[in-house]
Image 1: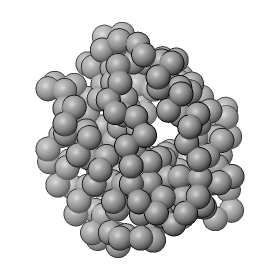
Image 2: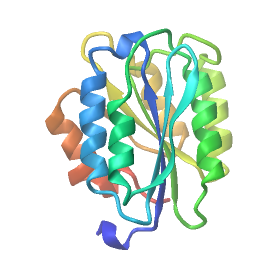
Image 3: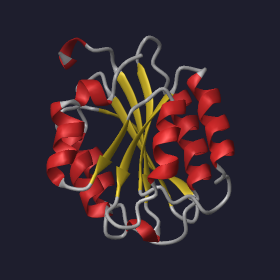
Image 4: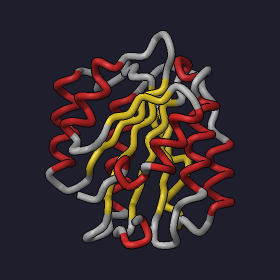
Length: 188
């Protein structure tokens, strides 16, 4: 029962690099479904990364759905993949908006391509584990069809005390982010 769940501080880390061009439509549709189920006490932030990382939406209450939806619609794909920089910024935003006794979580949506900056599996895992120890967890939503790099995605979620899901269609997105939201974004 999500109505009884603690407040959530969700920071979506969205890969908007060129490799996500064909997947970004599905990412946007998935996020919009989740937004419709946010509560007033929840907050959502969006960090995007391509050649560099940027804050697309500062922490916004779940009740301000129009602002959130506008930020989602404005995302466009293009450029290289600075995933490490994106992770660092997402964790910084999560820490700034930390909810004591709440669900503080970074949710990475990517095809798994990290090729600029901090990109080694070991370096990413070290960063994720240090944030996990601060009670900011990482869940991963893998988007892709043929070029999907899941060899790095699932281990990141494992080390971030989070979940990993592969999403290749709208039905799967609805299952993960709406129907089974309590299991996808658990409070630990």
